[in-house]
Image 1 (cartoon, rainbow, N blue to C red):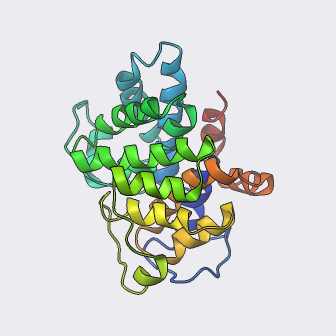
Image 2 (cartoon, rainbow, N blue to C red):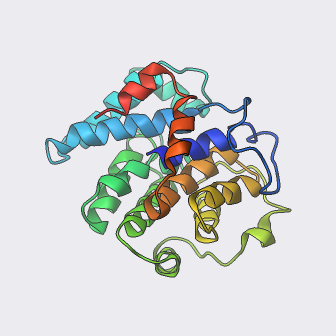
Image 3 (cartoon, helix red, strand yellow):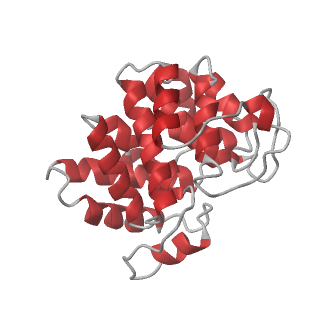
Length: 256
């Protein structure tokens, strides 16, 4: 969970002022948590609450926690459609292909007990809002990477799985860095976030990779960080530092 949070915080100050290299202060005074952290924590809570009922009520729990937690942070950077969904009585999805489905899915892969379950959980958690095929695809790709990473798959095995089942990773970060621009679609940001992990040498290096390509830096950082946590773990000092950016309510939500 903290992998996604750290990626979000590290990328937060660069979302609209991209930094196109890996040399930057990871935890800066200008960093902050965004909607990526808030939504990830909401899905984290929904999964753990629903697990007690074999996930039979997961859709309802996702709606409940997204609305009750996210409403407390109206200005943390939600997309317009999601903002209106939170602050209305509406519970139906709105056919989004945005990367909001993928950035909040890290706990799906971590809590799942099989690859199939990781995919199923990701689809359910995405589809309460982002029920467009690309929105679901992005969430499932990230959740699958996390499950494979936590269960001992190698970098090349994870790359191969993504290539065969989700996206063609036919580029390197160096090849796209100069020209990559802000893109909130799953199809325009999830492959790049996955590649940032695949080219990494450590947890911290994965976050630096993610931020260095620019674009939607906090969300790409959150996606990459979630996968990297499953593969490398998160250094304890970085978890401690990330907690300093959270308020007491969000920290309490992380205590299951």
